Length: 476
Image (cartoon, rainbow, N blue to C red; front, side, top):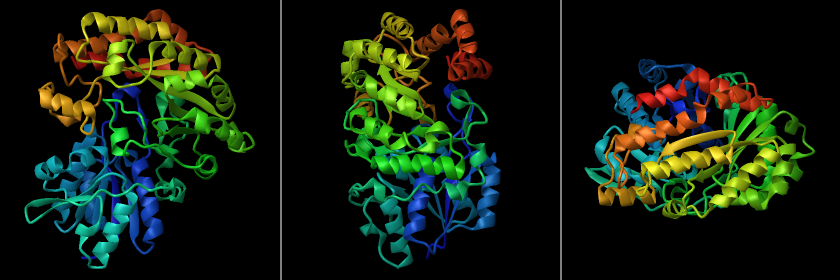
């Protein structure tokens, strides 16, 4: 069989209610599609975004029937992995000869389990997908054995085959720009209401891959080999300009897990300060608290070239729990980081995690007070979740801590594990109390809704309109 048409599918999904109402572009798919398009120019490629199309599962089935693809490929996080499975199932229902491929961190972490549980999946691409996908298609079309393709997992005659891991791409600048031209009809649909408003065009930009830190609850560093690789500063600035000028991208979310201000901050400022796009874009970064504290001057400069929003993984106030998480940061830096962001008019977004093994009612109450004292513009609280591919998953699985094995609940809003002293239900109740404490304050809500800061006004009005507190309450 030769592959003539490759259909990338973003399945129908329910996105994270904590972040309100939004529609993100299918970032992984546009990155993969661009690479395949360049390397195999005679292959027909299409991206179907069921979210942007508002397409149901029945609609997806009819679409696959009408377009007759050779390969259907999709990818997803742990909490929506089931949508990838359902997409594969539908493809096989339409035509058993359609080759189904899934990828991403979840399936890369547990390929054996996935192939055993879901026979509708033909192949899993483990790790970095571009070169593996291209080599697989070329091998298929040239009649070569695919068991020589690195980075693949599949079943053959009832036996699961894992080919050797694929080395990582050394030069990320060698990758083409994401194939937004393949989803140009959908672009007007991409928005993040809470963060930038319903009518602000939202796009995602990948400046780097991986992280050299080893947080015990994080899937990213292990997936990317414990390394941090970045595109060049010029390439990053060019990509910002490209998305803004060619597709009207304004709110640009950097997927980078670690901004590395010392390495890239000043250089990015120097590269963007003479470009017209800096006046039009709203950049979102993720940064470590210790990195922000060490480089307040760079935060100031980045604000001048369109950086409006920075998210910091504060996680917890307890030194003991931070050590359990292998975070490598400290509480004083959290206070200083929020102060630096607020002083430079950068919207401060703090992330917190509850549900550590040592957590009690008292320790979580202390965390709530800590989060109020920090005074971030925006706080997100999550339940410690043992994602496949993390240190915590292996430990929790071995010690029998995991109470909920339904991966669709692994969204950090559902409590998955008890602590030494709290039941899973009590952890869920404590999570709701965190949101109630921060967003249930009448005074804080009034201040937020009528804030002089446009982002803060948008956020608080959206949080109220989306009834986030009542949604958390229903999870108990």
